[in-house]
Length: 493
Image 1 (cartoon, rainbow, N blue to C red):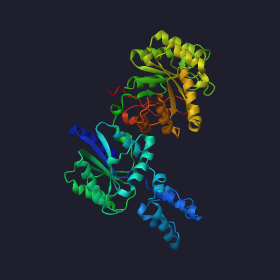
Image 2: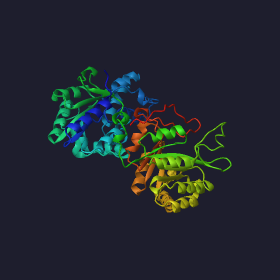
Image 3: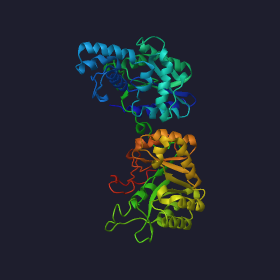
Image 4: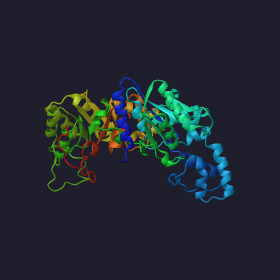
């Protein structure tokens, strides 16, 4: 039966922690082909060859067309039908450049998800991540600098003392290096529970050195030189690093990251929320046509006209349920002015404490007056605004953006929200964290993204909680085109 390698790793890690609770646990990663996708180095070097030699051999070449190991580029050139004389020149140039500092620092890229997995292990108690590589010692400084540069957006740090390199030259006795690296860390007092490598010959040598199978061997089934059939029996194999398969349920999540169930705007979603362990729910608030009641509705009536027999929840009813269930509520104010007045009045009537209140609104809607009004009424509550509009300024000028954020903080805003969908999210979050601001990450679409966001360790994460793997079936804020297929489940506890 085929074994999911991340689930096998999760089981192995839990078992190691249970059996050896007082030992320092370690998982070992190979670098090239296990952490780093070397196809990008191949592609960028070949494109650099074209640029330097004013040729067009590799124009239009895509990374997904590269199916050879970095030591087998000759096969790729043959596949591309490049003339033999040109091939020789290209290979000679490629060999001279592939391990230069420039190539290591600028052309190496990690596999999707691998740094998130490493991050998870690095923040677990009594757990370390070791590296054992066939690269020679001469590349130690360049290797660490490059890996830490790649790891920085993920908050991953690779330490010199946890890197074991080949004491011999290029390609010499690499399987023995893997075995020696395993012994090195074991002798240093680590309990090594797993070893990830992409080369079957290396795994075969490791299996021979560990006849009692104390170490789970994992084959990074990417691109490798040695014969596939060499993978030892019992080796778990895969090529996708997924936190959602490594982390079995929400009980393993860090308790200090606040989790918010987004868009609980209808009775079904509310029941789903109340049957869960999630503490915070978010509701979208608007005034009913005619300005009679505060209702839960994501879209404006201009964007989504009133539907026939449309039914909605009113805020007082939801506030009472939240208080009765001892939960907390995030109030997303879709307009300012009278809506703010009415919401503050209703909250006061129900008597929810500030610790259970969270107000969110856009700067252009609530303006300074709205935020200061909330601050006066609930000084110990969470008061938040999204800052996606500020990101271009933040990327262009940290000084000016910092001044703007400080101005907002003077209005009473004590948390800032950033969309997960922004491509610069990780670097922006790092800067915000450096300044000491509390950050909420929102628009987190699925379980895998949710786990990646949580383990960045923001103050809070807002998501629809449509995670069937964990028996959560949130359906979002019921906006146009935004509903999920879901089924109602009873309290799983």
